[in-house]
Length: 180
Image (cartoon, rainbow, N blue to C red):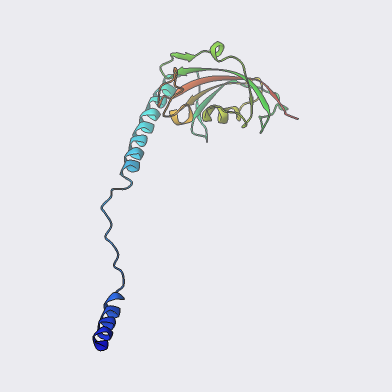
């Protein structure tokens, strides 16, 4: 009987020490949503870029330049004073602006948006306008063309600006106050 138990024990030890086998993974499609989203966003960007280029071509009175931030701008009025400065972090920028669609329809007039004080890079403001203000000095007026990703993006402003809508904004900086 002892031999049988010993033989059974040896047999169990030999076959119980088998290394575990890896399970086969289930077939899961990963990344397909992200790839489709990327393709959709590229098409959207190309369509917006064509519409913006058509708008710029139609403007005979303004000369638009592409910025490094991904939008276009036209300098409507410039300050020729050399001692005027560009806004820096925490400076208070007082400005007026309006927002229009690419077809020229006014979405928000300057009187609707009212005069605004903005602490540079410390308050909420849509990306394009925040970056555009960094290019301006007090007394200057610029016209900006913002693609949707630099404006209100996928959701719009949930009021008058629809989703994925490129916009035109005319901005006048009234003053720049250095915060002490």
